[in-house]
Image (cartoon, rainbow, N blue to C red; front, side):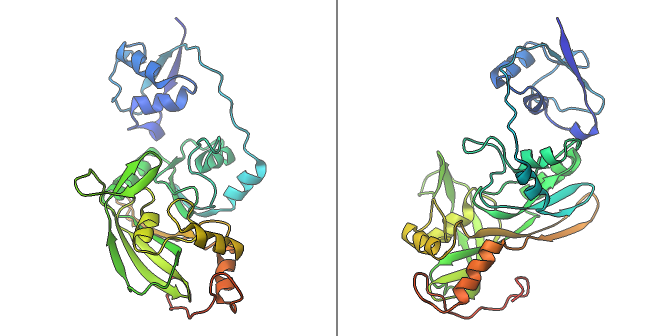
Amino acid sequence: MKSTTYVIDSTREGQRIDNFLFTHLKGVPKSLIYRLLRTGKIRINGKRIRQTRRLVDKDTVTVPQLRTAPVRTPVIPEDLKSRIRSCILYEDASVLVINKPAGIAVHPGHLAPFGVIEVLRATRPNAPFLELAHRLDRHTSGCLLIAKDKTMLDELHALFRDRKIEKQYLALVKGTWSQGTKKILVPLKKKADRVTPSAAGERYQTAISHFSPLRIYAGVSLMKIRIHTGRTHQIRIHAAQAGHPVAGDPKYGDFAFNRVCRKDGLRRMFLHASKLSFQSRSTGVKYAIKAPLSPELNDFLECLSAPASRGVEKTGSPEPDPEYGT
């Protein structure tokens, strides 16, 4: 029987064999891959292995010839590639950070055949390894951290798991925030495509956010938010639970308020991952990367400072913040 052999290099060391196969056997159902592993049709160094086996440098993975459904490779527009290239904030031998635009998912889904990581890989076809270290919502912009080798990816995952990576966001919320700096602890549970606060007795995930006002306007507030956990839609739900939904939030927001904001020029959700900071355990290097607001969000803030005419009230004094630059 004909077969294909893959020789593992150091960039894939430590990766599980099943995850490696999912990446390389596009169009092959996962159920078939697991069956081939169980029956010994897929081998490493000529030996049967479990699906949990982790790859080692110089391993040889032998896979029998398979009939696969044709995989259509999506054509990524050149202007989108150029846009993502221009979003790179920082890069060294191990990590890359981009200022992710709003409206683009990090992974492909039913709304788009490709995500940010696929676009980035398309701009660097010879790069041996580019993997997301975490995620951002499709509607959220800002710092997105990408590992350039498997060792750094594992380290970043450990740092996120141990909550050693500080994540800071900027959000414009409805209403005048009068609570000062506030810690919000509302446990969350996920159901289908929506995340909700959990009720007593339900299984939940702990979620902790710290909200601090940066600028107070009449009717809206610009907030700095630090998250201690990184749950799906955490900031959006916590803001809504506090009575101050994020402007433009299409799922958890105040839809009448969103319409007013849109009429005044805000075409997206005002949530931005403004800063990411951590220290590498392996090298000791300290990282602190900031992502500037997009022109659209900056313009909307300028609009809020102008004399009020209609819609959102556009008055109020900014509260100075050295990190924000006011």
